[in-house]
Length: 287
Ligand code: AMP
Image 1 (cartoon, helix red, strand yellow):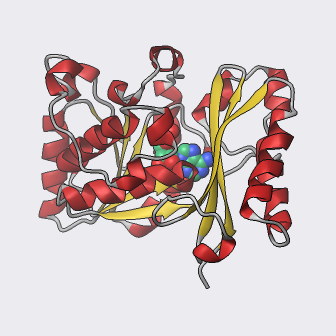
Image 2 (cartoon, helix red, strand yellow; image 1 turned 30 degrees about the horizontal axis):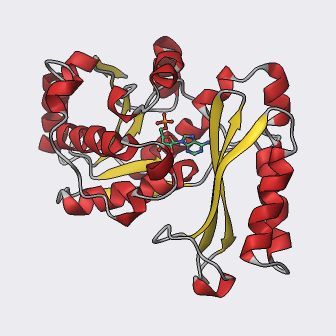
Image 3 (cartoon, helix red, strand yellow; image 1 turned 90 degrees about the horizontal axis):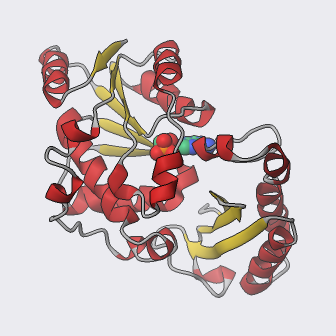
């Protein structure tokens, strides 16, 4: 696996690959890799001639400075896992390489991300999706992939990135990949390593509540389904739901009745102590 540190390293590598007509799959990450990230890599490897992964903790998408400071970083392990998974090249730039002169010098452009960016994460993490759009669009322009792979754990992020690609006129196919979970159901996340062992034991209650609520939803209203999930999770010591919204999966607008949409997803954010975890579940899928 080739390690690329600079934009010009990537440009050179990409033009060599394009010169031989290779298709390029791209998996952007913030590192501290786990089997969730590797499932994206696996799919990318199976669908493209070469795969580029990026490892970059993007400062502009953190609205909470403490979250940025404590975000886990494990570059050596990440490179080993990516190489084992069959990645051709990893792009792991410095902050200065991506934002020359500092992040403030790059704050100008506002992305049109549509209504999908206004709700849920957009509401609770101001500026987060502008930061995501900024880094993902930059990486797309540097890497120029044919296909880019994203996890459904960040369900809203995929919708926002699709909107960004449209409004910025970037020619790339966005591929959504299913959530990878630990054996006890907890969605894999780099932030899980920040949980205490006690919190880690309790955290699977998030998915347990979501999963059980799918059957409950067949005979109960949207509001009752919402409430049963929130009450169950809030009853766990040290856990607090920040939001739980049951939405149309395409628009991310809240629904009041199950009949309003053929594709309905519940998106949740839970604080386990100071650690913020997200997850989601499908209540209805299009036939
Ligand atoms: P991150 O490093 O958290 O920015 O994540 C990089 C990519 O991996 C994003 O597209 C995430 O949605 C995806 N991802 C993270 N966790 C999981 C998971 N448990 N299952 C599937 N994809 C994931």
